[in-house]
Amino acid sequence: MLIFLLRRLLVLLVTLAVASLAIFVILEVLPGDPALLILGMEAQDDTLAALRAQMGLDRPAPVRYLTWIGGLLSGSSGISHTYAVPVSELIGERLLITVPLALLALVVSTIIAVPLGMFAAVRRGRLGDYGVMGFSQIGMAIPNFWFGIIAILVFAVALGWFPSTGFPGWDAGAGVALWALVLPVFSLALPEAAILARVTRASVLETLGADYVRTARAKGIRERRVLWGHVLRNALIPMTTILGLQFAFLLAGSIVIESVFSLPGLGRLIFQAVSARDLVVVRDVVLLLVCFVVVVNFLVDIAYGVIDPRARRSA
Image (cartoon, rainbow, N blue to C red):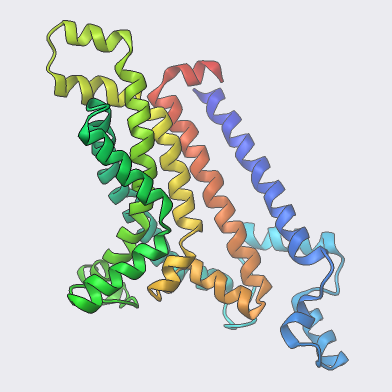
């Protein structure tokens, strides 16, 4: 197990190093002057020179890259040109919204999808199976922002049950804050639940035909125990993969939902930073999102080793 973890950790570190280099090259080395983008085409030469010096653009590219990575490793991030505060403070404030939003959406999608997928697999070829697959097709075809708009019109405007936009902050109380996240969470969760239900159905169907399932049934074990104790655990590997990918997507891809509901999260921060050409913020936030994706994949690999010992032996 230790060799398995060390190899996965090495892959994680190499991936992060390559990703950081790629982000730096794309944002700073390719043609284009960030200072000129910020100040505009009519900026004076002395003003441009002063901003380039402030941003460190007058130094060689390798020095700028090492300075950036060294600052991140030491916890000293750059200063946002738009907000005039350290980028780490901006990111920390926005993570307090984006991470709970993604976690809640993942939990809700799992609670919806796993029972539906198992229900469809047990009733393969019958009305219940067709109903779940129809829900899955619709959920996969409709984008999450459409669910968000419909949820606002129905539950916020027409019924007045939930706030339509904005976030009161965690200082207002956990209940008030979570209530404001209900519609965004379900708007994010429904399309992901549609995908996960389809994967769960396929994985459970494959497991239902295994010899150990027939043996368990022949021993007279109750069907519910067979499904939840034998079938589901062995069907978890493909489901774990999808859950990991979905959590990474929910963290990195919530920009549209955060814009629809006016949530000051990480996705909206990068959108505003791109609009304002604040490349210091863009660079750090993109690398953070890459870190999220890589770390989630690392945790999925560890989950493989815990769920299925064969993954450890093959590694």
